Image (cartoon, rainbow, N blue to C red; front, top):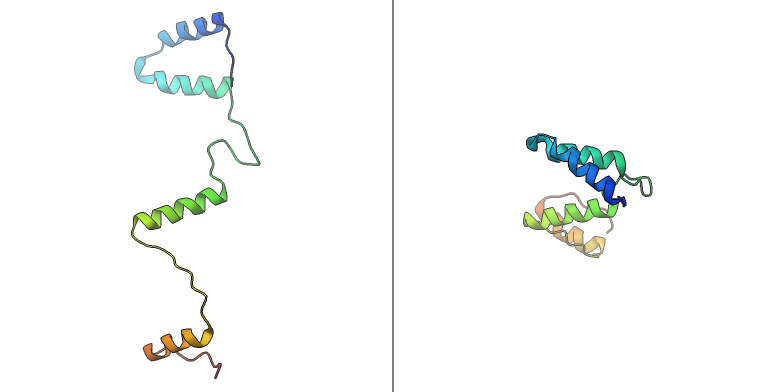
Length: 94
């Protein structure tokens, strides 16, 4: 975090008052990037998602779309019994 003295904050306010209001947000972001650059944490830029956060975002998007993933522990013979009547080839575990 950047700590400004009173005089530095006054200079910044004076400079900001001379910027076109339509470009003020962009100007302030540019100044902030120069004075207090983003921190690189664990090889990631500031704001970049971790792999776990990306996975969680995909899970939430699927749920929002009405899709869920259910994991079941089933024996091969049980799955074969479900698939074979549907016309799939046997696994060969007989």
